View (tube, rainbow, N blue to C red):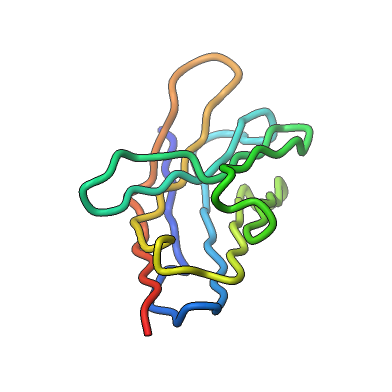
Length: 116
């Protein structure tokens, strides 16, 4: 059974940085898509960034140039480096993994609050 544990969230001032981590267990993730979604209060969950098994990345327009997704297959871990944070980045951030065949698994989320 796939398990995902996010860490690294917290309170940060506008313009600051945070690095989220997602530790995956229960499978081999080299062939999985790994990514991050977020959900702000009163809004739907939305894609932030994802990275394929070959390293191809996709980003939401709102975070392009500020966020960077990466993965370490040896550690079964995905990262999200978030720079130049804005108040509108405040949300619960969820890690996700999708295998080549099968459904997506989700973490429980980590809260990121951007406020002065």
